[in-house]
Every structure is written in structure tokens, then in C-alpha cells.
Image 1: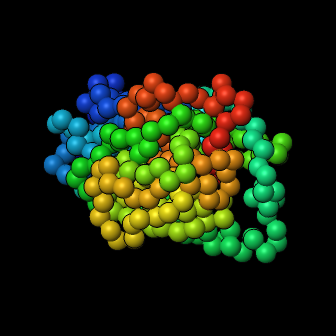
Image 2: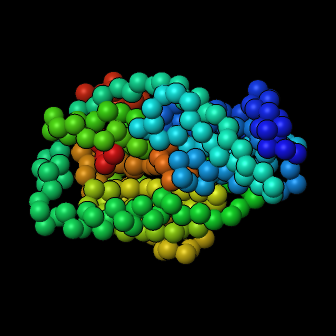
Length: 293
């Protein structure tokens, strides 16, 4: 099929209902969300890239669909998903809708976690290198567990996307979901996968990264202890550590992040409805659960 004809066929498929839309994430094409893009039928999955990063492609009935993580700082408008396969290349448009996020003001007692000392900067630089490498990890997988389970039960103290202020100083938006829980509460893997990185980071505290395949990674921060090691296979609901207050926090909680194609996206898109006891901190003036963005 000629590239122009193929592009027309691909564009026509964008209007086709997709089985992936039955999942909790559906298609949420806003900054910090997820776009599910239907692709041309093929015997093998095409290669998809967005913003220079490889994108998850899953079989969706008789077709393929690309599951694209959209960065929080992505500007609304039309963006391009690059598709390639044997003998063809194409570009598909993704229309990103605007989305506004609430603000959150937190008081951090350890002022060094807001304005690091000069001697902290080298450690932070190394932390960022390791975190960036973990976020960019890719492992081939035919199936990916897009339905996650709650790793811990408790009030949602900070939703994803909040425009955050630490000690009245603006910082990057919140790139995860904070769940408040008592210190020492067991943390369960949100899905089965392989541990690719653990460590103690200046802002994130004790942290675990679990790879679930095709660039989908979950990150668990501020743990009091870590019970797994890099290279270890874990099952869904397996205990991987315990809730703590390490790193930049206002109280014990778990910070959960979901990463797709190297970018943080809203974990709530992959989780079942929050338990009835989970109440947003935006309604609680004295929340306990502020974390690193």
C-alpha cells in the first residue's frame, strides 16, 4: 500500500471504537493523560514514537492501538504520532485538549528539601540520572497490565497534576498520586512485573521502580523500607516495602507514579474507583501527604 493511501486508512481508523476504551484509562488526551490511537491491521505491531520516545502498541481486536502518555507540560493542540512498519511510514495527529489543575500549598519543615544546599546538588544530579534511566526503560511484551490495583488503602492526600507550592515557592506540578497511610503499612505491587531500580533519593526518599512491559513503569516513593531488589520478578499484590516519610514529605504516605513512554501520567486512569474512605486533600486543610513532584 502506498504511503498516502495508508495514511488515509490510518486516519479513518481514528473514529473506530476501540476495545481498549473499555479499560479504566479510556482515552484521555489532555496533558498528563493518555491518548489511545487506533492503527492499521497488520500481522505484526508497527513501531510508534511520540516526542522521540517509543510508544506502547497493543493488539486491539483485529487491529493494533497505540497507548500514548502525554506529558503534563504538553501544550494543547495537534501533535504527531509517528508510525512505521515494513515498507511504510506515516504520521497521525493527536489532538490534545486543554486541562486545568488545582493548586496545592504545602509547608515543608525541612527547608533543605525546598532549597537544597550546594553540597546536595551533586547527589540530586545523580538521582535524576538514575530516575531518567528508569523512566526510559523498555522491555518487549505482548501483554501489559493496564488495569492496576491499589498498592495501599488510605485517603488520597494529593491527586495528580496539582500546581504545587512548597513554603510558598512554586515548584513543578505533582506527577503522581499520594495515598496517606500509617508508617509501616505494607505496600503492594500494583501489577506484576520486574523491579528495575531501587534506591534512596534526595526528594523521593526510598523508591522502587517496577517494569510492566512496553515502557509502562510504576514508581513507589517515600517508603520506610524496601523489600525487593533490582532484577526481581514480582506478582501483583506482592509486598514490595512499607509506607514511610523519607525524602520531601509532610507526613507518611505513598507516592505512586505511572510512566508511559518516559512520561508521568495520571495513575487514576489505570486504577479502579477509589475506596469510599479516600478523600482528596483539597478538602482537607491539614493534609498529610505532600511529596516530590
